[in-house]
Amino acid sequence: MFREMWSLNTSSRQVQKANDFGIIPIISIKAGTFLKPSLGRLYFSIQSADKLRNQMHSNLLFLSTDCQQLLAEKSSHFVWIDQREIIMQAVTQILQKIKNINH
Image (tube, rainbow, N blue to C red; front, side):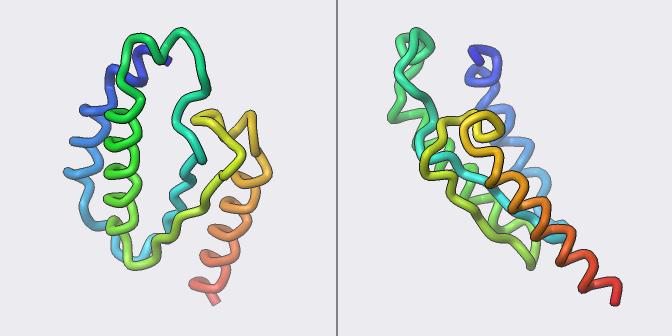
């Protein structure tokens, strides 16, 4: 977790460089909160992390002409643990979009 948070700026720059995926469907899954209370929050400003996270998620919506965002309201950063049904919903939607493109 520490390494991931330490790399947020690098991740943001990578997203900025990837700027056009055409019509490829993209679903951005945004957790309701970035971090639950823990020791990790002692090392980083949660407001700064949330601001950067919000900016990154906003940028993702411009990577393709077919982008959308799903909000995992009851989840921390670990959506795959807290609300894995959101991930299944996103995968199902992407597969349906691909199926529709190919027909």
